[in-house]
Image (cartoon, rainbow, N blue to C red):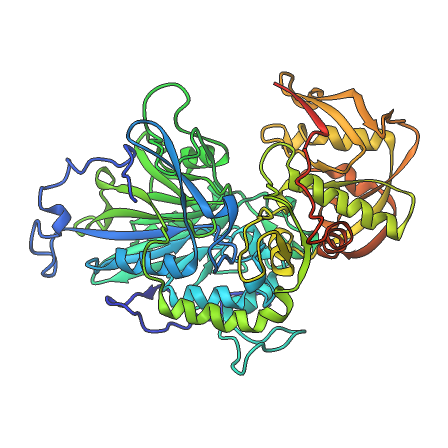
Length: 604
């Protein structure tokens, strides 16, 4: 039931009850002015008489999202943010790392007696080896030390299924690998919320749907949801027995329930996001003019969530924004997202009116802050990283290949995407010489391969840990037969059906080429006559042997035709395929060069 946060830091350790039933800083113009409040509101001293407190009390809400177990500073483009300068130019800033995030959050809390720290999901899953190797126990331990109060689940919290999520919440050693240290894993001190994730048998949420923060008469409720489309982007085994409901309907339902309980200040933690018009974290999202604002699923959600909700903390798209979007009553409401991997955090001020118990929304202000690396590291986080690194080092430090430069994952077709597809094709041929091609989903590529050394291995060396960070899902490589007509349909599904609004362009192995005409719409964007394999047109009646990871082979990411393949052969995991390819095709004297990424001809 509603938990109470102590008024000082460090907070005492809270053990949650068993929640699973089934097993540099710039304030954007999006900040709303506080002109409607008395001048003394920010000090919380106006209108004395409410139990000795002022009528208005500022509540600090610190938030972040999509950490994905990035305890060490992420490398390459994953460890940088873009900042708009006063003259309109941009620069990049190195950002992220749990040692720095802890320091920034602890500094931000100083002087704020009413401070809440919340997250928007995907705290774990698709994690680098330091956390992923231990089923993300290190990240949960770090978040406990970080004094996280509450988080929504994200889609990646279901990567290993509901039972493993229950273990992360409640504690206990891993069911097959046991305990990694002398002490039993204690689980999360903070509640995971999943209001729209139901057990199909009982029809009830598998996690607590909401949580209430209380302090000295101030009450703020949090409702947590993940995107309804989670089953489309998580392996079928991970969501087996679960139903994912509409985000808006769920939030509105529990907002009414909180209102009935006398909780009128409500924040929604929504693991769904949008796409701002600029990639700069301090972009003025509310600036007037063409091309401003935010698009994508969160825009529609925000426009329809009940006005009883005072702010939305979002995520999933790994974008950075601080925007106001009108609620159904036409009143501006703050919607925020803090990029990903711990590179940013959002500081939002919610002005609580003790007379009404609600947030004075005219006074809500918010800004994203960079988790810079020019501050002291938090010693407790350094000790945590060192302890787990010692356990991981024998596995993670092993060299598996060599690269001559950064191999990036960005772009419609990426050099790293081509490399991974080539690796899966080569591996597929070792299992079945008749394998013709390989397809890789871009969302499964979690980080670039960087030339600069991440540790003591030396520049250009690819370690097992770095390979794990690129492909952390432990998907198997599956071989299936498809007709040429089915293969053409798969390529068209990149830009049609559920992928029409936000195309998912598969990364393709060497020998497969085609033209993507972005001046057209829907499936027509894939030019059928241009599709070639080793220079020959695709024969719709012929059979092609295709390698892909198990997630794609099961129809994930909006590719139902991939689930229709026949004669399936399930092979080793995808990281093994990448490791074997790098080891066989590179050496210190002859490293792999970044692929040209020229297999898809793009017309714009």
